[in-house]
Length: 410
Image 1 (cartoon, rainbow, N blue to C red):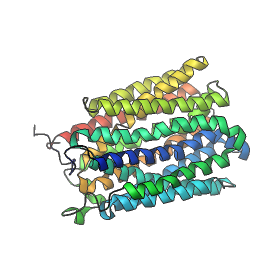
Image 2 (cartoon, rainbow, N blue to C red):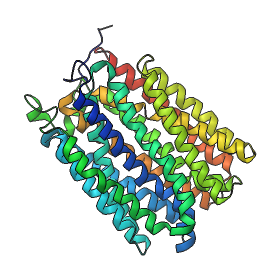
Image 3 (cartoon, one colour):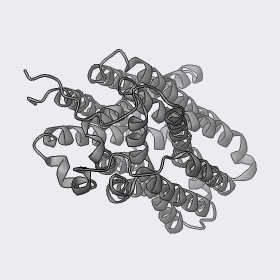
Image 4 (cartoon, one colour):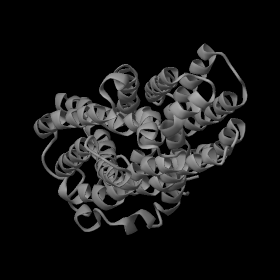
């Protein structure tokens, strides 16, 4: 067996610097804004359906609009970060998110809301890829998995408070005002990003000038198998994750909870996601991600079967929602440190961006299929069992990504 390689690492500081910590903290805050912008739709979904008189299938299409936008952003815009630099692309993505989110608050019909969620998704898909690359490049080599994982924890951390705030304010303010406030949060981050983000095309130069941003480089002999395995992991993982994120409130109500408790179940799921992602990030310093990620995802499949198949009191139902968050999103978010280690710096944003774009196909299918299954009156046990299959495939693909990235012979 050939010796392990480190071609995915790229240049970086020998130890933590003040500017590196500031960049990672900023990426965490931006990912918090992403968490607000994405999950708020799931929290307001029951009220929105009631106000507009739309079914679960139409709501599933609205969920998928943002995911389609993420695919466009990840594949079409994020690769430009390898040519033009992370700073310009992240600032452009924040502008898209702000504009789309605030405009969503003024939507008067499904078509307009669909279009605005598409724009929001384009910004989020772009910024997710650029942030993963930037966080990896700002951290010491030994701490890269920790840095990328901590950035991912911003998403569920914000989603927790989003759920709690929506549960309190939705009956008072309505959902339009909540969407506008969510957009204002992203606007506030723009000047901070302009101040902190480093100038210059991180990862560019030399060979990068001819290769950066080209998707064909992802299928060079050294990267082909890794790219296919990574795309599979992201596709199947996001298929399950966005089904849960989009429908957790509705599923909890269907399991017997009130609307308010259903929103709390969504908040607890996201709190579990924050706890799980943080735990994964800390454990990744000592435990190989190729073992840690599949273990957590297999545990998530068991928790999902329990949630869907066993009738439980309110406290236990909320507890299992929390556990699903710990294992599912905590485990899945370990895929992104893996992704950041697959490619060298000159093509990292392109590689991660295309993984996000391909994965969004699964993210689109996940909530959309869930909506149609619920519209067809599928039972909860069948619903959750159906999503355990792609979850196990994600676990297998994640282990494969780790194995292929470690050895030249692969």
